[in-house]
Length: 245
Image (tube, rainbow, N blue to C red):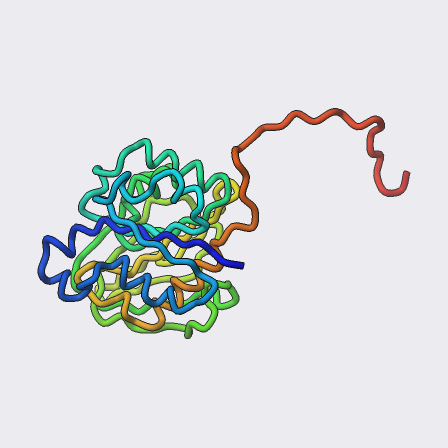
């Protein structure tokens, strides 16, 4: 069965910053699309903020099974109306993967209901620890691996307690961070993954690519509904008195 994946990126850093453009000449979204596209059962689309309808017109959003989101410098440019549509779509079954600085995106904060603030420092060394090796997102990932240069994100990370934590990051300054977190939201699944600063070639690292690929399959919907309902049901004709009655 095909999984429809939409990779959304602001797409502005690559245009405005030569350093970022040198690392991701086709944009972060197309870098992710290239490695996800090697999977024949994933139907990949890309979208950027400056596309018509901010890249997510009704037909695209409604046909998306898993939405990946990368944002940083233009969070406030995303219309609130689109944020509500994304929230509603997740509640109805779509998977949502927030990457790196998308922790501060309107959509992720709407799904979390908290500030999603954290500590940060650029240009650090990270060891990413897999603390839930049996989780589907951890498939094929070693106990730990090094990201030579990454933006440090540190606790306290103001998020609701995750349903599952798959990865923990440790930085050379001693900070730790819940780097791979999972939540259920309505009928949808949400995964946050911390590595991926725009100036660093993080999305070229094989382990990072494998984690994101695994996350897409994990977040794919098991059920999608047209609307969230609160249905009335009739009372049973007779009550249930237990298995021994």
